[in-house]
Image (cartoon, rainbow, N blue to C red; front, side, top):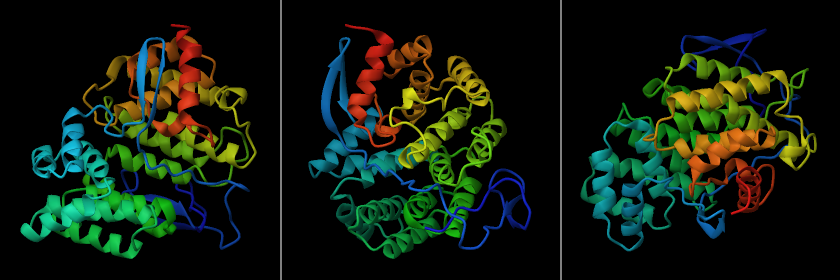
Length: 359
């Protein structure tokens, strides 16, 4: 994969429209010689369920990617059983709640038979944007598992986008493909198209930050463009936007890259990654935002909660971590507990036990 062009600052500048708000300048990559941190690797999770565990009276199902969406869980269960109408009705009634639509389509699309069912639906209703989008995302996830031609998945995403020009979800599919193995221009174009339709797209920003974190380090420990971009996006978003937590996500993604390259300890609690002045400021600001603004209804709120709990645990802040673990309850997520190559179940339960104490 070619190096990711810096997004902030400019020497030899080329314009990229609407990456973050107004027109920005991107630094042109310095030829083919620029690379990522030596040895860094990308961890890609197919968020499937794993065995359950218990601690402190809490039963945790590892890991349910519905993230507490009861209607989505019911529709997915019905789809697994061969009853398809619930999934069709779910997407129909989700409307233009774009973060929720992206979450629901993505979860349904991971099901092994989703592509076949969505194709049948599309044959019956060729003008259905919901059917086309589910077909596209199903092919994207098959491509990510190596069972589909990525170009075929891209074509399906473009076809779905043509049927629903305002919907960012087909572009989320294209961004998932670009994140996994596309070039820089493909990644940036997909993100720009997605953000033009929904400037606060939660999943899209997380994907961009994960990719950007793989750029080489800055001159100082807390100097990296992923932190700059995440803080810029958080500051630009409305006060109640979950993108306020994006800087914490950026720190987790950067730790993943450093640890995979052998530049940080494999135990995240044993590193000073979260102890610098910038990290401390970000952790305090993000935790304060959660206390004041947390949206119980946001479809991906548990992703943010787990990132906050992970950061507070690693930073040695047990009181804040305990409050977050109480709020998470059973809704653990694989990332970031899996970083860099850990068993997420063990990492989560160990951190939770440290914060909450024995049962």
